[in-house]
Length: 360
Image 1 (cartoon, rainbow, N blue to C red):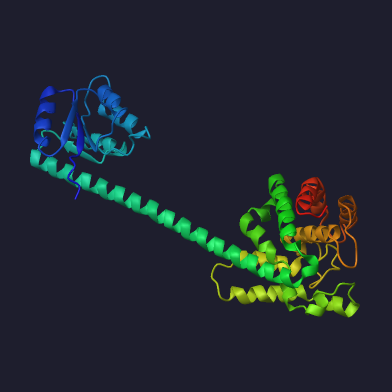
Image 2: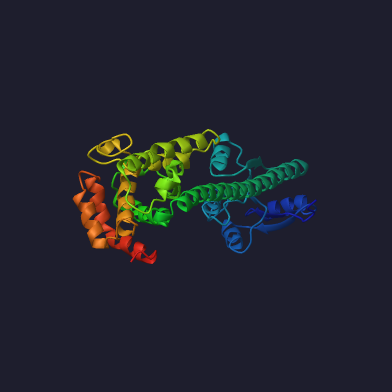
């Protein structure tokens, strides 16, 4: 139990009232008296009491003016104030309570009643502080739990992405590179306010993490095709083209076992639509123009760019400028023209990212 004596400031311009009030309280509390609001405010600059008993009718600065100053100062706004005054009309009491006082006690007062009301208010304030402390701790616990859940989500995404990449050794590093290129393009998109109505609802961090699963459907492709060191036959390519649909099915299966599906919804869009083309000639659904989700249209560009600047058994790596020309040539057919323009604006950053990942 806390036995520390509480500190009460008593403010009244009448010396008799100060003496009577102090005598009534000093057996239970440490009481400091002030004969003006000005002196009280100066003391509040140095120390904060547990409660203030404040007269209303004082020269120079009345109690209403004093409490306004107290409540408008962040360092003292939390201090409870009780008006202790001879003004007994309802209008005055209402004004005092409206300004932030917790009680309004009429003089002359009964000392036992004053003590009891102070005791109750101090108990309420103590409970409020405990509740605030509890809420702060609870918020911290929730933040820590949320961080743990996010870290777990990211670990699951990364593990699944690495599983795909371990099988598809020919395109090693593709997932990490496209993820980084995607982030550069998305941040530029958000900064410039393009497609703002749609992007306002995005959780950028989840979008970025979910991009790792855009090729998760390759898990279903046979090793002899996925690891083939040469160009694919038409039949083999048709099987490869099934990976967006299978990827979406894999993610839907995971969704059945979780309540927080946001990051999986992003991942499903990436997996299903990153091979769709602006003119409708892509796969697997043949979507056209803005029928293709924005995330799929963005991924289409960075996915193709990385494939172009990466070496494959059946081709050499294109230079950055050569890859950019191919992307530009695909504007309006393969790619969203507006996104191509945005890609060109940040292409130097994309190139720098590729260099850092050893592609140049």
